[in-house]
Amino acid sequence: MLIVNFLYKPFQIKRIMKNLYLLLCLLPALSAPGQAPVSETIHVNSIEAKVWSNGAFFGYNNERSFKIPVSEEEDSVKVAVFRSVVPWMGGYDDFGNLKIACASPTGITTDFLPGIMWHNEFNQIWRVTKEQIIGHIQDWQDNGIIDNPIPAIINWPGMLMLHSYPSDTTFVNTKVAPFYDSNFNNVYEPLLGDFPHPDILGVQGVIRIPDEMLFFAFHDYTDSTHPYSHSKKMGMQIFCTVWAYSCPEDDFFNNSIFVNWECWNRMQDPIDSLHIGFLMNIELGNSNDNFIGSIPEQHIFYTYNGDSIDENGFEENTPLVSVFTFNAYAGTEPNIDIAMEYFMPINSGNNVPAGSGYPQSPQGFYNYLTGHWSNGTPLREGGNGFHPNENLPAVRCVYPDNPTVTTGWSEPAAGNNPGQRMALVSVPTSRMNPNTRTFRTFCYSWLRQNDALNPLSTAIDVIQQKSNYLSDLWTSWDSGLEYPDCFVASSAPSVFQNEEEIKIWPNPSTSILQVSSPDLIMKKIVLLDVSGKTCYEQSNANNSQYILHLSLPPGLYFLTIDLENNTRIVRKIIITP
Image (cartoon, rainbow, N blue to C red; front, side, top):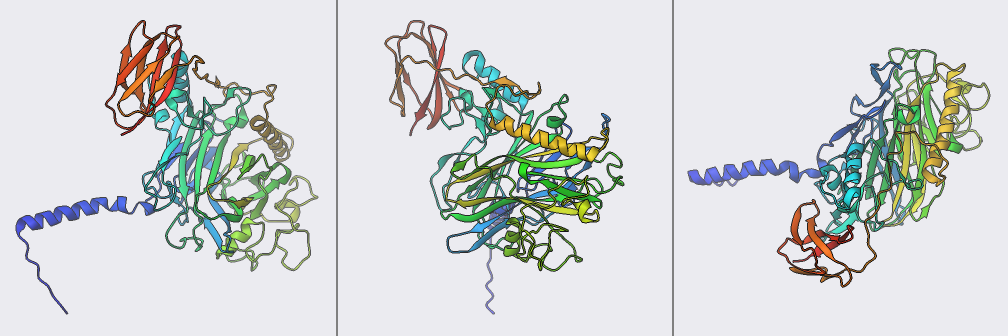
C-alpha cells in the first residue's frame, strides 16, 4: 500500500474547503437529469387537479390530485377520482429494436424526465390566466403597442433557443408552447400582439381564452436503459398544455379540463409502429367498487360506480367520469380520425390469469399499447376480454355497450364484480419520422344525473352529446354553433399593419439604422427590446427620415413608428455583434 502524506498551509486548507463547498452547492445543477419534478395545481372550476413536470398527471406517489365535489352544495368537500394518469408509448426503429417509455401507476418510477432534451434549465411549469391574456390583448389593441408588458405573457415559452442534437453547440429558435399567432408568421412575438393560447383552431375569429393554462415539457432521453420499462430510449420530447374554463352557467365546461400532448421525435431515426397512450389508475371515491366502459365510435372512455352506494366516497352521489379525444394530428397527415383506437383493461395483483397481468418486460408494455394482453393474446369480445384459447373476434376497446341493459358486452352484463380498475387508452401513429410532431387533445369531464329516472343511462347519453358538440366546436367553422358566455372572451386581435412603404436599412444592423419614407411623415420612433423596455426614442413633428446611432447588445428588437395619420407600424430589427 502506498501512503502519500500531503502537508497544507492554513490558507491552502481554507481554499480547499471553499472549493469543496462550492462543488457541493453545484451538485444539484450537475445532476439536473435526475432532478425532482415540480408541480402546479389548476383550479378555476369544479375540478381541482395537479400535474407534475415529469409527466405525472392527477396523482404522484400517494397524493391524489384530481378532485371533484361530493355534492352540489357550494362548500362541498372534494374527493379524488384518479390515483394517477401517466404516459406510455412505444415503437420500433428501422433495425427492429423495440423502444418503450412508460411510468408506474403511481408515477414514482418513470422513464420520463422533466424539462427539454439536452437542456437542464426547463424543469418548470408555466402558468397564465385569462385576466392576463385579456389585459395583454387590450393593451395591444388600444394603440398597437404593448405599453405594460405582463411577465407571464412575455416569458411564455412560445419560442426557445434549443440545441438540435446532444453535441450541438449552436441554438435554433424553436416553437415550444402554443400561442395565438396574430400575424401568422409562426414566431412568438408578444410585443406584436401574440399571446399564449391552446394550439386549437378558433371559430370565425372567436378566440376561446381559458381561465387558466399551464405548460410544461418532459422527455425520455437518458444515456442508460430506462429504469421502469428496462428499454432503450425513444428520444421523445413531449410538450404538454393543460387548460380549463370557469363556466358556472355551463355544467359541461365547468366540470371539464383539457390536456394536449404534443410529441416530437427529436432523434435522427424514425420510429415505426408508434403507439402513444396513457395509463389511468382509477379511484372513483371508493376505489373498490368501480366499473369501466367505452363508446369506441366516439372515442369515449368512462368509469362509474359498480353498486348503488360509493361507501366512504361519493356515497349516493357518485358521478360518471369520462375521457375522450376530440382532436388528433399524426405527423404529416392532419385531420385523420385516429383518436382512441385501443382501450385495454390492465389487471394487477397475484390472482389474475397467467398472461393477463401487469407487464414485466418492454414487449409486455408494447402488447398492451397495441390492444393485446401481456402475453400477446389480443383483446377478444366477451367476459373480461381475456380468451387465450378461444377463437373469438379481436376487438379494440373493452366493454363498448350500454351497461344499463342486460344484452351486449359491458361489465354488468359480463357478470364482473366491481373493484379496482386500471385502463390504458392508446392511439397508433404508424411511422414518425425524425423531427416530426404528433398531438392528441383529451377532455377529462364528470357529470351527475341523479334527478333522472335512470341516472347512469342518462349520463351516458349526455356525454355522447357533449362529445359531438366539442368535436364540432373545435373542428367546424360553423358560426351557428352556440357557446356559453364565459367561453367567448374576445374577438381575434387585429394586426397593426400599413401597406405604405417604409424603408429600414441595414437590417440586421450593428450600430446604425436608417428609417425613411418619401410619402409618409413619421412623428415618432421607439425601439424596444423583447421585454418591452425602451432602448431608443426619437421624435420630430415633420420628419420623413431618421438615422439611429445605436449601441445595443445583439438580439431581437421592435421598432414602432407613429405616423402623421395616427396609425402605428411595428417592425422587427436584428442587432448583430
